[in-house]
Each structure stands twice: as structure tokens, then as C-alpha cells.
Amino acid sequence: MNFLRKITHFIFKFLTVLLFPLDKNLITVFFHGYSGSNVLPILEKIQEVGLYGFKLKVIDFPEKSFKEVKKKLEFKWELYKWIARSKIIVATEGSIKLRKRTIIVELWHGFPTKKSGLMGKTFLNNSIPDIYCSYSDFGSVLRNACLGITGNRYVITGAPRNDYLFDEKGKENLEKILSINLSGNNIVIYAPTWQFKFYSFPPEEFSFKNLFGFDEFNFESFLDFLERNKTFFLIKLHPKVEDKIINLIKAVECERIKVLFSNFLRDKKTDFYKVLNAADVLITDYSSIYFDWLLLDRPVIFVPVKIDEYRKERGWLFEPYELWTAGPKCFDQHSLEVEIEKCLKDSDYFRRERQWILNIVHHYKDGHSKDRVINLLKRLMKEA
Image (cartoon, rainbow, N blue to C red; front, side, top):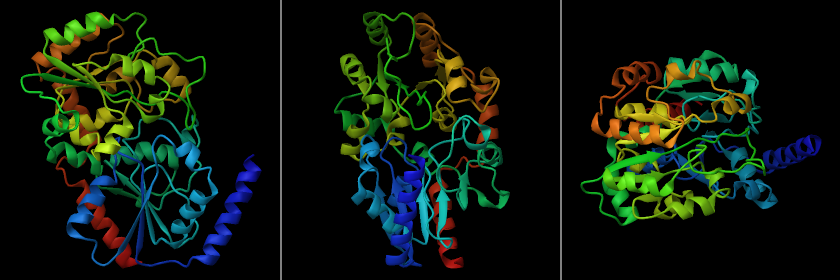
């Protein structure tokens, strides 16, 4: 199968390079949806101010159907055509390089937390980027442990999606897309990561007893808890997980619990990060969203119920886990409810620990990351 894939790649590369010449003014952007996009803020800014004569092509990868779409020859042909023509490719999940003169600018889709590549837990099957846009020197070191490239390829820009945390009126955006009134209510967002192997899906025997993976969970009691605390509970799962537990998450939707499906956000043309700052508290496990959330200086709760399995399957770059996660750890429903109440009553809960990690992870805390990336693209186009 690997041999066949290599042959197919060689044929597509040969034909597209032969048929489609390089366009020195073309920038191609890979767009992977609205679940925390690092390219959407750039596209919106370009639409607002223009790109000074450069051409722009956006390749839209449907989040939920990409596994099927990428197998279709017509899609692959279209993809390779634009890759062959592009002077610059802006990606968030890797790209393919067909010409030496093409520059791959990698934004990635979050702060590096999972072991991959040279760290030995997973593989990286795409081209090594020419430029990697990083959060900080610390972020560059972590990523380079996996990539192993020269230091001059890293440019510290910050993550463009984090600009939304500074600029957007998240609560108003949330009320608009959900058609609800959130006045006088607390908001808690639960956003776990992808817990399985790279480019794989949950095993068939895997089952979700409840959203948090607790041994026991009383849904009615949790609803009573939310009602007593006047709290809306929002759920944003990884796009790959939604199909596996769609019946479960549909069953929990009610007046105080809402699920932000990937396709729903796409239909509303609203990125998840445009509503993220509406929340008073974040609940997560090992997701890189936690490091972005630090910019808001608000409490976070962790539910690392499968931490040992996660270390084995994916690998966690930060050890010990407890040191780098600035918030309480919950392994059952009672402790989760207790900690939610604490966080809602005291926004300074674990603040000292959060600030310590914030200053290590983020070089910039100003909401202008998209501008730095756009200036980088303009410079690269002029220098070439």
C-alpha cells in the first residue's frame, strides 16, 4: 500500500509540475473548518485590507468528510494543481511540496502538546515546512523536538486564532448563533482533545459511558447542578469524535446544555474561537486549547481520566502533567461540580500558576498575530 501511494504521488507530482507552471504571485491557503482555524483570521484581514496585488486561492477541506474526499482523484488532482502553481502554501495540518521554489508556511492548529515525528509516538508524513509560525521560543523548542529543523525556519508570530479572544464579543456571537438569551447566566465550555492515535479513529470496542469518561455519572443530577448555579454548559468535541458519539451528545442537548457541532459552526460561518471568550470556565483534558485559554486569565478545570492511556497512545510533551496544568484535576462527578462552583465564585483560582505558564508559552499577548503572519507573507513574496 505504501509503495502504491508513493507511485501515485510521483505520477501526480510529475504531471502537475509539467502541466502547471509556478505563479510567483500566488498564495494558496488550506482551510480546515471552523473548529479553531488559524487561517480564517488571516483570510478575513486580507478581505478587509487586500494583499497588495498578490493572488489568493483557498482550498477548503471539509472537516468531517476529509477522509473520503481526499481519496477522490478529482479532488487530489485539483489539490496538486494548486500546490504546483503556488509560490507560498499556508497550512495548518501539513502540506505537500512539489517544487523546491514553493515556500510552505506552517501555522499548525495549536500549541505543541503531543509527541510526534522524531519523538517517536506518531509519524509526520507531510513535507517539512520552510517556515513554522510559533507561539514563542519555548514553543519552537517543543516543536523542533518533533521536527528537527534549523532554527532560522521558526518565526514567532503567535497563533492568529487567538486574536479572536481579544477582538470578538463572544457572548453576543453565542447568543446569535444559538438564538438564546444568556443574560444573568454563567457559561462553562467543555472542549476535550483527540485522544487516539495520529490519523486513526476510536477502536470499535471503545465506548463513551458519558462525556467525561467517569466511571459513574448522573445526568439528571448534573442538570440540577447547572440550574442551581444558573449555568449554561457548552460542548465542543473534536470533529473526528462527533460521529462516534452523535447519539449520546444529541441526547444530552437541552435548555442548559448545547453542543457546538463542527457542521453547525460551518453553517453559521462562525469559528469556535469567536465564542470561546464567552465562557467563564473551560473544562478540558490534554487539549492545546488550554494554552490559548491562558490569554483570557480565567479558570480551567482538567478531567484527565485516561491520562495513562493517553501517554501510551499519543504521548504528552509536558511532564509532569500536574505541573503544567494550572487548575484542579477531576476524576468523578462530585469533584467536577465542586470545582466548577469554586471557579465561578473565584476567577483568581489558580491564577498564579496560570500566569507562570502563560509567560512561558506566549511571547505575544496583544491580539495582533494575524498581522504578523500577513506581514511575513508579504515579505516572503517580495524576497522571492
